[in-house]
Image 1 (tube, helix red, strand yellow):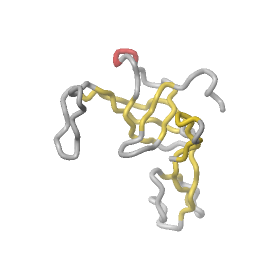
Image 2 (cartoon, rainbow, N blue to C red):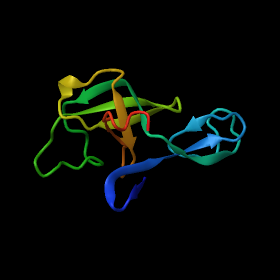
Image 3 (cartoon, rainbow, N blue to C red):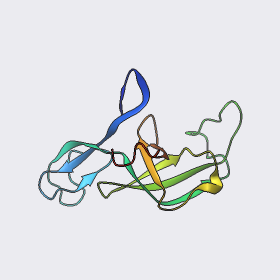
Length: 128
C-alpha cells in the first residue's frame, strides 16, 4: 500500500490487477487473470465498499503465525468487503464496537503487512 508520507492514515489505494482481455479485477495483484488465464495489468483499486459478511474471532489463532500482543488477545472482527470494483476482499474490521457491525455498512480497506484492514468510512470519504 502506498501512503502519503505526510499523512500515514491516507491510503492511495489497494494494488490489484485487471485482465486486459475480459476485464476481471483481482486482489491481490496477479500477472494472470483468474477467470481466463490471460495477461493482467496492475490496477489501483478504490478501496471503498460495503461489508458483505463478517464474523468475530473470539479465541487466539494458532501460533505461529499469530503473535500474541503484549496486552494479550482481544476478540476482533473479520469480514469480506465488496469493493466498488465488484470483488470481495477479506479484511480485519477495525471497529470500536463489535456489536455495531452491520452487513452493508460502508468501509474503507487498506493494505499493509498481512491481512488488509477495513474501517468504517466517514461521511467525507463517501463518493470520493
